[in-house]
Length: 108
Length: 112
Image (cartoon, rainbow over all chains, first blue to last red):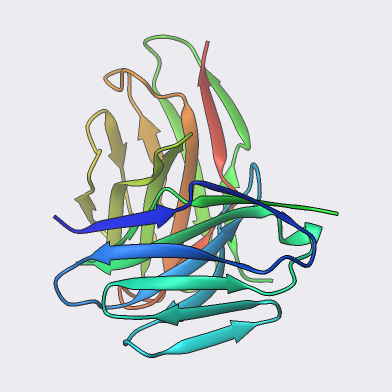
């Protein structure tokens, strides 16, 4: 069964303290790995799509990387406005299969 | 601006009632999806539709029904057969099954 596991479940960082979120997956033939950001009470907002091992994408303080078994979302010098839940998903058949997310809190 | 509109934002249902959640998109996307989100559970797929007049069950379709009569619209009905309907419901669309999603802002359904 295709699965997506995110860790840690929750992460608390001081402003400026860089860290990484992990997304490990078990799918037969990856057809896309997606990262989303979700603020409380709102719909997820698209961040990145990765398709092949070795691929990297960046947006402001965020950088997503992909290996054959996992993806990392690196957050460099985070700010309080980066606080949110970060969701990882993989494409299976005709839909996305989501992990449970990592809840990130960045304190001043 | 193009996007997905879900309504209402909050919905209250009495025991035994059916309720319908609206989802409308003006992105000209072919594929649309319904997910349910519970605390600590992540997003779970209820139904999806790749084209007008066609839809498929997802992982947790029991107690739900959908229709896709227009490309822009994909309403979800939560029936009385759904025993635990209290959740946050998210609608999404994509150009086709290869692309990522654009999500709506969600509907929070509560049973009273």
